[in-house]
Length: 177
Image 1 (cartoon, helix red, strand yellow):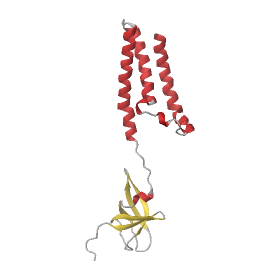
Image 2 (tube, rainbow, N blue to C red; image 1 turned 135 degrees about the vertical axis):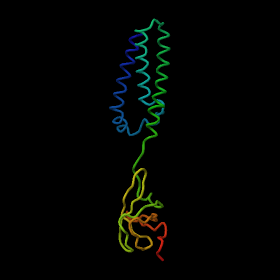
Image 3 (cartoon, helix red, strand yellow; image 1 turned 90 degrees about the vertical axis):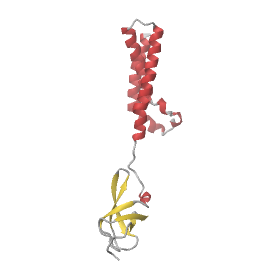
Image 4 (cartoon, rainbow, N blue to C red; image 1 turned 120 degrees about the vertical axis):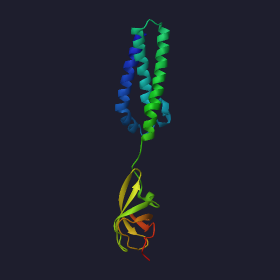
């Protein structure tokens, strides 16, 4: 029985190393061919962790307790299940949810609120800062209404034409008529 435990311990460690090192290479080489087999709980980290814990627990119980072989196996399987669940909900699931992309399409900016950073003349170009995700992005802009817009004015992106944001003042400035 001890040989099985050692095999699981060593096999789990090797499996973890191979999947971490070769996982992305293999995935890109197969171009998502095996994605239909992907079930969240059968993540390589969870499986390798469970196998490794099963082997390690079995070795520890064999060396340091006087329990029967059946009890070793039962306790090792229970420890592997508990640790696998903890790894899944404590590491794998939060990491899946934390992925955040900073990519966006410039066409998605239509309707967004921004602030003029470089004044926009009635005819010509300036610059507008628009909040995208967790950060800000600067874009070349022109006045949609053909009005001069000074720096600091809040604007709304009306349209995007040839990579240039066409903006209109969001609120009328006080004191101007």
